[in-house]
Structures are given as C-alpha cells and as structure tokens.
Image 1 (cartoon, rainbow, N blue to C red):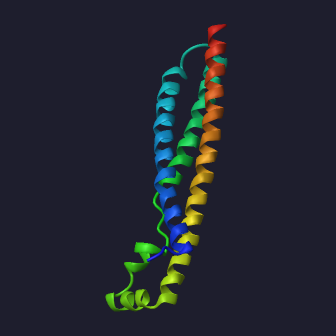
Image 2: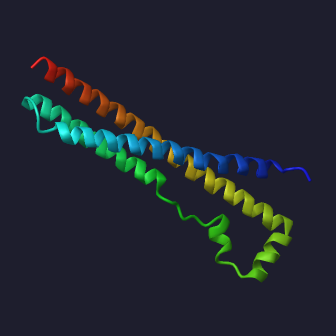
Length: 147
C-alpha cells in the first residue's frame, strides 16, 4: 500500500516534535547553568558589573520561561486525545469510513503543524534572549576585568 501525501506530511510533522523538544531541553539545561553562574557573580565586583550580571540573569530567566512554555505538553483534540473520547464502536466506524479517516488525518496535520510552528517560534525567541544574556554577561566580565 502506498503512502498518501497527507500521511507522508503527517509523519514529517510528527518527526519535528521530538526534534524541537530535544533542542529546547538542551537549551533549557544551558540556560539554567548560565543562571547558576550569574547567581554566583551578581553580588561581586563594581556596581556596573553587578547590574550587567543582574540584567543577564533576568534575560536568562525569560529565556528559560520561553523554553519551558515550548516543552510544556499541548493537549489538542487530535490523535490519541480524540480517540480517548470515542467509544470503540464509534472509533471503528470512523476508521472504516475512508472519508472520515482522511478528515482526521487532515485535522491532525493542521493541528500538529500549528503546534510545531509555535514551538519553533518559542525556540527562536529563547535563542535570541540567550544571546542577549551572553552578551550582557560577557560585558560584565570584561568590565570587571578592567575595573
């Protein structure tokens, strides 16, 4: 049996979910390590260094919150969430009806694509925030070295 275009696209979108979640999980760990470093440095040095480290900490906290929002489970109304609400008889009817099965796949494809898109937007925002925090921390380190 050949795979339909919808099924192929659905498989591709489903493959993106663990990829983006893995990227976010890795970046969350790095952001938390950065927060730990900033927390140890925010009370040392001249006031400008402390201010820069404090700003880096706030931006890293925002990046961490964005990442946590990305990896938070989404409870949509497709796939297993839909099937969990159906009786066995209804599920058999839906899956036996080719048009209904295609309609379910189309809805899954749209919903999962929207979820993946939102996750990548959140990841992009977290990466941008992390970059700002790194610049602030670097500026604090350089300022502290010449103070």
